[in-house]
Length: 91
Image (cartoon, rainbow, N blue to C red):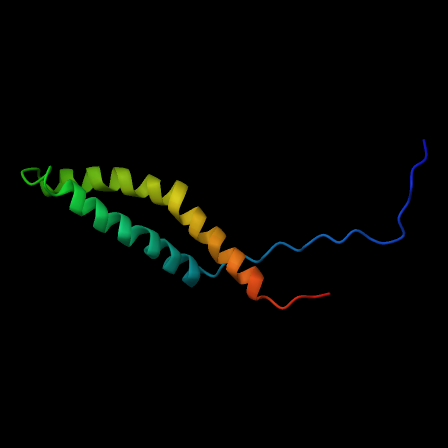
């Protein structure tokens, strides 16, 4: 068996820098606002007689994990992908 050696260095793409705190805040808001709005609409008829703190507890118990584990990572991925497409290419 022979091992071929390549004279060209292997190019590894540099990791994209993390989005700024302002971009992360905007993305988080874009995830939270619709989830809270839809959650309030869905929970409203069922929870009319509940204490407001219990309503907030139930709503946030659903919205926060959904945002943190599902929606925000997908939005950040979409943002990163869009940013890569718009970045100037170094060839």
